[in-house]
Picture (cartoon, one colour):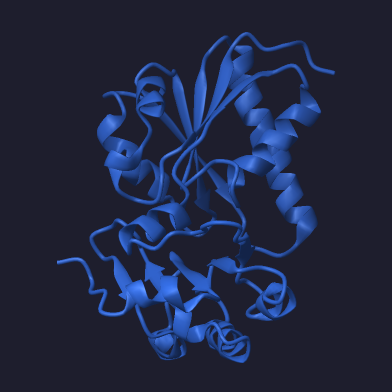
Length: 252
């Protein structure tokens, strides 16, 4: 077990895209930390989370982008998580405070969640504070004025990476489904929603709260549109809520 570091790590969720949706607490933290970490693909040096939060970062802030491989190889990913956890702990060992930026909420389908586990495994007593952020599906529901749940309804959040498999599996058990990462296998997702009778009571949102935001009212268009990475779907069984999406237009 490592000696306890003197510094503290903050997990910061910067929300879905609009800088004004970053929590006030997170903004205050970002303005005082010594080092700011964020994830980037090994294919580039760009961080969307940094781009969102940049208006609140102090001039001269030390920024470190951590490269994560876009791979399904579990060993390769685990190696990256371990190495980056050690990099962050080295900063904390020097008595510095650090923030790890992530999109949406830091504990919902987030790279930060893996880093958090890796740091806790190496140094269980490390000082860590996670600040919740607005998840993409919360912002999307607000954008189109659709309640996520009401009364005794249930809600499930799933990944669309494997297409419509989880929709087919769980749709009989829940009232509402959020499908994140719907850009992959969009055709099969649309087919699964059609098969389960949810396609006419569902809506897609890409790049929510960003300048290039797009609302997809008819999900039968999903395969043809080839949606981008930042696409999610709100699928509902009950037509009364879905009626509110009819006529929704893209933001001016």
